[in-house]
Length: 162
Image (cartoon, rainbow, N blue to C red; front, side):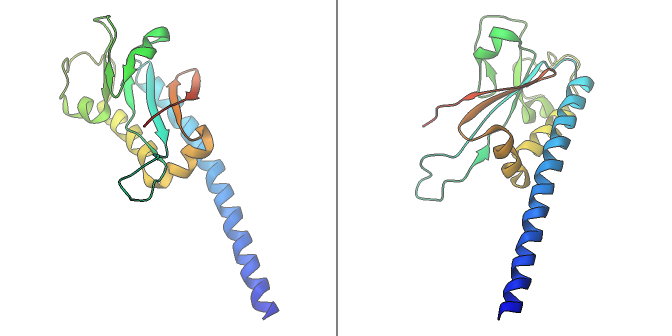
């Protein structure tokens, strides 16, 4: 039995090492992807999303997830007026939209996205919301957080939700 235990322990160690390597590689690739995204989409100044584990899920298991990101040309204090894919401030020159609405043109002002590639937005959204990236996003930014990605980096703040 001790030989089997040794083999099992070795297998578990390999799994831990592979998981650590995956985390490190995925985090680095995500940072590179974000830089390239902003370089290729100068019309987007920020990507905003929330990620958290719900407190209640109608009796189902509460599992961590990343919510649909919002792409916007808002900067600075105007980012505080971005909520659930919409800009709620007073400026007429600011837009905010989720990837699906940019991709399909289903927005209030479909021509206002400037230098923005809709496919890039859609792909970026798919990356961060995919089931395979949830552990990576949790490790990078944490649980119950609001994330703002810009060309300069990431700003993470606490997020309160029901």
